[in-house]
Length: 200
Image (cartoon, rainbow, N blue to C red; front, side, top):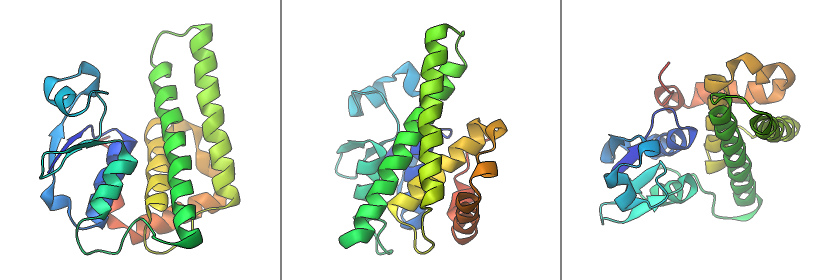
């Protein structure tokens, strides 16, 4: 398998972390890709010109991290990341959706923040930051539970890791002690999380 990736993308980190937890990362060749330049190899696999994008052994291109992670969860023998029943499943999928939405907002806010400032851009940045702030409040109110990683906890951890990477000055931990404690326990129990950290 081949994964078109950028080491700074939280969505890529989520996929690589899922592969490591599933113990199938050695089956994936990482292909460094600048999606913003729309290279031909990426476009032929993903017309949206986004990473991550996974080429399966069968030559099928899969894109969007939830789809890729669900595919990876169908491989190997490790315990599944996608619970298959009841409230546990819906909790994991809800956490994934919340974290992915927060990552979308954080990435867009970061991209806007490095461009020349205009009033309209400032409003976009403010709106994205507000989405992240509300998401953090919800996660502080109902932090993930400890235990075997799920697609939900992986997504939340990667989202928080992206905030640490791109918005360290904002110190999300200060107002979210329960969430901070959960992340500490997740990191301690999941060595692969540190292995997937973006370059400094």
